Image (cartoon, rainbow, N blue to C red):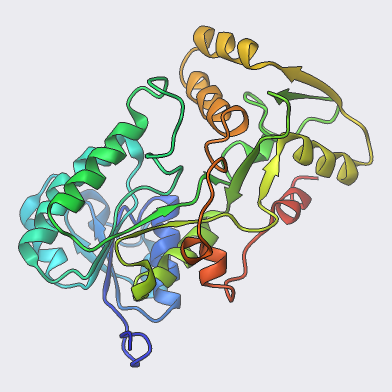
Length: 310
């Protein structure tokens, strides 16, 4: 019987709780009844009424002063909990190494969820185009496994706040109402999940023996969409046909070559998802798909999200 079933709840530490996903994770943990701690940098900790901390405090989180650069603070924080969830940005992925060391030394953590929350880095087919973006995550995975740390990897693909607000039109802030670029043939499917929903699914895994040392994928029905399907949905909502401009793989690769940062990375991720199919080209077992594991979790579907953009 899991601790949750036995009437107790694991104590959870969220690293990166002042970020959008981290905040969602902390709130989801608290809503599920877990005593929840947030590791907070000293400059934030000095102002618990700041906009980034006030919602955590109001929800009942316990603030712990510390940072990934302060090993002793990490060790002290980790020793107080059963589960550690890290939600730092990918550019800081390798800074999780001291945290892994602290988890190993503390010896009390029964589950670590590292800062993945995107595509499965072991499935990406875009070669060396990503400027080391996925290599960092793979390096962290190798370290976790080498140290024998119990873990769960969460692969949610794209957050809804990324690319979907423009209907996958880099440079636009809102969906187009006259013409739309379709990358590739428009039939390859990508996956979008809202931050708060990712957080709910993540918290469901922490006391679940089925997800121990596994990768959990999120492919929610209604959120696995091709660019043609997105265009069709949007046309229905605005009651207007869009002119579709199809961008071939060769054209997109040239655009990527010529584009400045950060546009270049947006185009690389579009190429990965909607041309190479990195979100969906491989089969996954229902035993490791979040909506199959936790059918009780209500999540926002793409169709519903697009209603908010009309």
